[in-house]
Image (cartoon, rainbow, N blue to C red):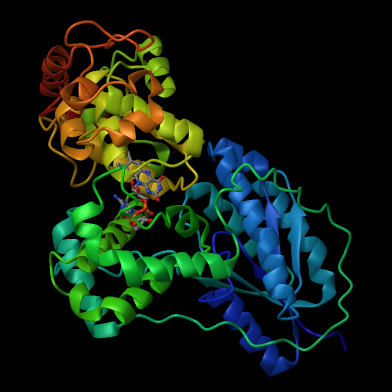
Length: 480
Ligand SMILES: Cc1cc2nc3c(=O)[nH]c(=O)nc-3n(C[C@H](O)[C@H](O)[C@H](O)COP(=O)(O)OP(=O)(O)OC[C@H]3O[C@@H](n4cnc5c(N)ncnc54)[C@H](O)[C@@H]3O)c2cc1C
């Protein structure tokens, strides 16, 4: 009789620890003396269709390679295959079934095309009599599990968070251990196209699980207490910089909370402590994913506040191009965009400033910025990115009110007071200090630097008019 094979299809859960699909497959294999086989399918055509940044694709491939070594130490082969688009997954999985695959284990994904892909695979498995086990561990609390007393989905963060924290206090957090060493096996794998080697463009970011977990542990042990004071200053490494790993599942949000509890359990429950504020950010991550699952029209790039889709954004190409290049004449915006272009990462405060600037100063549809961010970000995540953009554009759930318009100069003075961050990315202004650095155009624009492409006060008035023109037109918008 063929030895049963338990197939773990890894996607955005690229970790050995706290991997429910992997752990469950190993437990099942221990029960029926089966073999665990892990699978990863690279789908660059679908990734590109989602505007997934080349850096993020590279990080995925590098992490898969590292995981091959980590799983090999447990006698679990990880077959990394090069597919094309999501449609290629079904025949690739079909090619593995004759090995004696008894069951498939995978973590769910929430976006529409991913769900369609998984439905196709589920049909194939059902036809072949192979069991499918799907696990929902992308969020700490599964989507739909945090509801109002009337059973509705929260559209506002603060009550969502309150309820979420009550759930944490009552249920606690569960993480799955590293699976046990598997018996040696002699599984002969079919010849499928091997995953292409990464280009190492993300090489600056370590990818071994040990290094990722050390980064997370060090942050919780040493830096989280100062998070509240430091998190808004881009010149300081005051945040965890775990987002690229959370996005590909190199670490889980559950592991972050479990570690936080271990290192700062008391502080975590004290509202303004660094630990509590950091936990809040992880809750925002859950919040946006819950919203996405409950309101799938967001995946189709519709605004949450329907009437705002009626705004006629002027969408001037030249302005957009200047924003993308980091040549707007507003130093904090330019430094931030150059940070994104050069490193694939951008500090949260700067994401808010640049997003607000694109929409409310340059009058460009937030969807242009959302896509641009996605095409560059190492941590690109649909729910967080869409949520962040709709928040900044005042079109989303619990968004900034439309009349709240960031002033890029005062934001710069407050959050980069010494100009260290600006000087790092805008060398044209390296000789400037004090207020001149935040607004270098007082007398004459310094040589080599660009003149401001818009006047903030004028732009502000136009923004208010654009919103005023559509406010109260929700009914029309819904019909549109
Ligand atoms: C316009 C805009 C676009 C954004 N796009 C993304 C994106 O594509 N991917 C992404 O992970 N985050 C996005 N964010 C949220 C946030 O900016 C990043 O998560 C954060 O800067 C990552 O740095 P960190 O890991 O040091 O965060 P920390 O401050 O250490 O926070 C810990 C973790 O909490 C989560 N988190 C923090 N803030 C938020 C938030 N506002 N919304 C949702 N989750 C959050 C992230 O997973 C983060 O790694 C966006 C924010 C804005 C305003």
